[in-house]
Image (cartoon, rainbow, N blue to C red):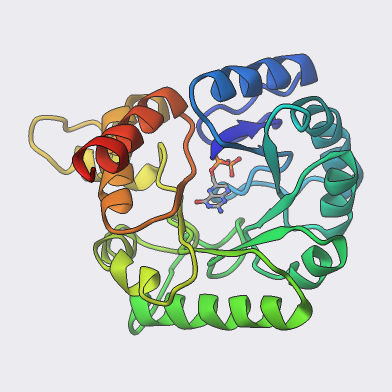
Amino acid sequence: MGVVNVTPDSFSDGGRYLDPDAAVAHGRQLIAEGADLIDVGGESTRPGAEPVGVDEEIRRVEPVIAALAASVRVSVDTRHAAVAEAAVAAGATMVNDVSASLHETAARLGVAWVAMHMQGEPDTMQVDPRYDDVVAEVRDHLVARAEAAVAAGVREVWIDPGFGFGKTLEHNLDLLAHLDVLVATGWPVLVGTSRKATLGRLLADSDRTPDPPGPEDRLEASIATATYAMDRGAGMIRAHDVRATAQAARVVQGEIAK
Ligand code: HH2
């Protein structure tokens, strides 16, 4: 799953693809690099991000989805039913839902749905995230959401632990280390660690790199976590750096596992 953020403020590439032509060109580039699906988002959900209005979100994603959907499967990254509707009308066939609340919308529209786990809301979720047992709580929440979606009539459901969404570094590492617990539920698992702050913090903890690397300097760590997740059974990886991620997937799944 290649990421196209049509936003001015996404944490890793904010502003670069706000212009629809630039966003479409970037999407085409990601397809050429090996993406099977393009995830188009019009609202940043980075910690502390300001919500945008639904009309503006639709204005951002609609033309980009319409242009890309002819050549690749497209998901829309949104928390809003009206945006999901407009996106599906433009050609999207999956709703990537960081709020895990749009299952009825996905059922009505007849499209696939990703339930991602988030504790709290983007503007405050990183203030003081707490769990007794992060792995069990995330699993139980996602399984309940997936079952609700199937009951509502959704035929393709994915679950995603939501790295960085209301989670400390330790929570994120615990979830990654125990990805097999999510895979064992039988629901297909999507993993999005690409360029995330957790990776910067991890690297900054080592003596040799005292300064945390910025989002664009987290490629190697992103590939390491993607490779780990694929090996543990993740069915889809959400990635900004598609070329490198697709190569890692080819090696892990196509060659070593032959
Ligand atoms: N992460 C982000 C956005 N959407 N969706 C899923 N399913 N899983 C994720 O881990 C996930 C997601 C955050 O990354 P990005 O879109 O690059 O940034 P922003 O939210 O700032 O636009």
